[in-house]
Image (cartoon, rainbow, N blue to C red; front, side):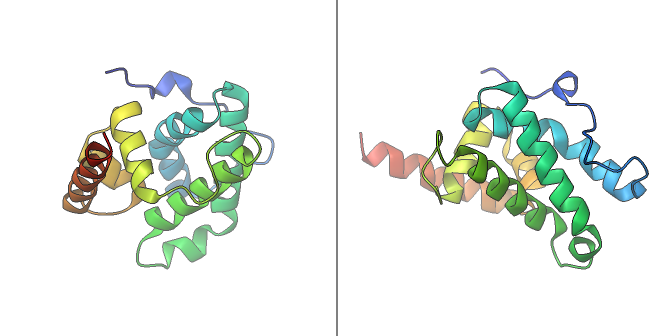
Length: 145
């Protein structure tokens, strides 16, 4: 299995990303950018388009950063922003709008190469929930064979 995320794949900060950002936001970006980029590259094979979608998502997350931090699950809300942004970029050439969230788990696991704990960190949920949803997705797909 090939892992499609690595720190060398990180795009440089874009023109819309402020240079003086809160330390927490910078750390969040550093942690999630490679995984977000790997996910975006599944739907947007052109590296520039994928990097642009991730940059746009981070710009949106930055706008709502204080609000996200005040929520019960900032990582889950940030993931929804990323999914939505990638979806906007793929409307004409990618997956159907509103593809099931469990498909994202399968993509993160089988295509990107993340283990259940890593997926849980990326999408803002617990490992047991990810593992159970991956099992259900696998069983659902196997029943269609």
